[in-house]
Length: 242
Image 1 (spheres, helix red, strand yellow):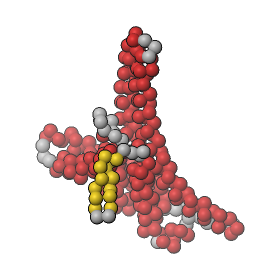
Image 2: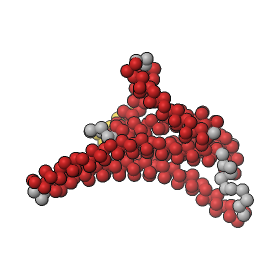
Image 3: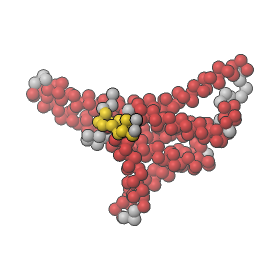
Image 4: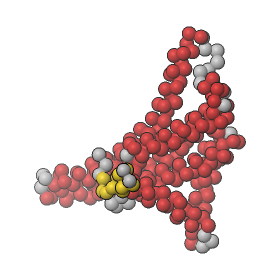
């Protein structure tokens, strides 16, 4: 269970402040304050960072959002870009010493999946209308006796898709940290066999940890991309059932 550091009292409400909430707050601060300062700055030293941010935004628009959502996907760009950078920053600050990966918590990934669930269904209803959206859930030409069970199955699939987003992001981020802890534990496990054995294993263990950390950086980008990409696919399918 997440360790609670302190509580904020708002009348009868007592809101817990945990390390994951703190990491989310830091990520939100970076997106709301640091990113705008970098993008608006005319400093030549920050030009490479501005270019990288712009390149990522253009990639999300041209390779993820527009191919899946169509021309109307431009209106959903603020959500997809915010989603990508928010997940990415949370993944990366979790690799900083004394940091914590917020996306390694069920509540955080569940909240992100819930926002995707809302945007998927909102986009579908906005494009087709409420009746048209639910009318296209079951493919046309299905025998009448199959319509009811298929309708229920398709409704459940709307939920399972977002649950899969939650579980995939959570599992991948936790798995990487477990591997790193396993490699670090080798030093202590083999150290019990003797000081010489521990010293011999330590360089190998440290090398594996460094390699895993570099791999974790790649995974941080990859999981942010996969979450946004799958959300775009599900949103496009809701908007264009045919």
